[in-house]
Length: 84
Image: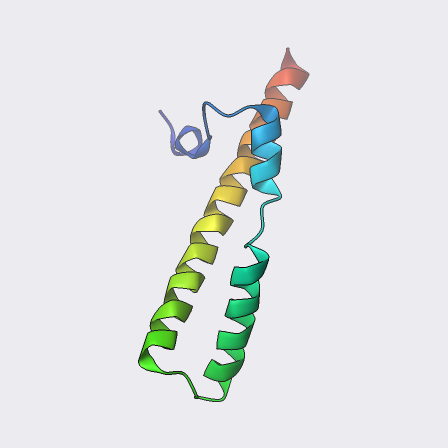
């Protein structure tokens, strides 16, 4: 299996891949992230808030990776159907 094949998401429907590709951070988490980023810019975060900010940023990183893989999978599906 090649590296690009490792990036393809399997076992998901077209609709599931499209939803994943368009996914966003939950509105409450986005609001919390915005508030924490503002406080962080002013160097006013408590230790527990800093940990929460780190967790949210990690979740965003993971979400972006999944979204990219979903878009890549959709692109591969489109290529395969164009060839067929």
